[in-house]
Image (cartoon, rainbow over all chains, first blue to last red; front, side):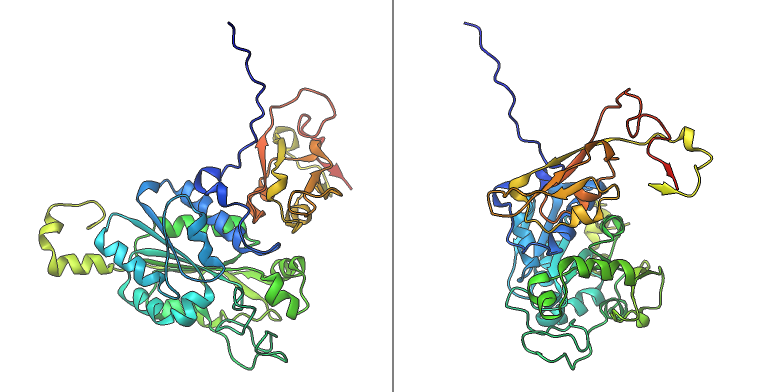
Length: 290
Length: 104
């Protein structure tokens, strides 16, 4: 009996479908949230960078952005709050061949995990840290965060934030990061290029990606998701190699984007091997010495 | 795209063509692809998807130049474009080098 060929009703596949757990899509991020865009740009960069994805691990902390580890179809860790970088450090030290990408939010990396960030950058751990900065604690209901701009409204500062926010690129630079860049989710191509470059770079790379949080930050500051993107479009000043101390986020003056730091210095593992594992250096294990 | 004059090398430029695919049930109706499509080829549809959002709909399929911007800005992995084979039909955007360029 001749088999009748079935009409192909295959649903078209998104080009990144091979890197995401499609059974978990649609993801939990709100309509208009920029984390999805940053995540997709990170996946595109992983794909485009040509690294061995079987030896790539994505580590996330807690928060909206922390969910990314659960959506990526690679080895991934969804760690305890603020401890994404310590987990990543452990992974890298136990298996120096791995490529580590830390994908987390501003609250996780800079509020509860601030200290870990400082010390990983100081040691120059070989990893790529992508921080999705949505200017508040989105998942818990829009409380003021370490990155909320001065005078911005949040659940806990209903008439305006009296605090000065962090200047994240300055902090990364001051702690010794070897690659520092900042983009917004609207500058997706630049962001992807930057992440690709950072993944290929040895040492501690830090990329800040500004992203709208329409439900918690935008609603309290009278900004629709598209308004926020318009602000990014109008107020963005692309200035590579800008002085990190001038990079405060001030939407009135304009936000400076670009690649600010790109230097080389020996990583922690190189120093460690030189002193404690000289035999491994002689074995010429790939990824250990260069 | 409107230019104040036809670029001198206009006859050597081949405009690529694309076909937009929309995975409607993934869409959450943020409208970023519609707003930032350089050719305004998309519009919000009136129908609802499984989750109750209005997905975009391609209103000007012949305008798509396969720039992939909708694909990379979509936070939901819900839209992408693929290169379309060149069609030798006169007057269609992308087939004739000047057809995609309008002079003001």
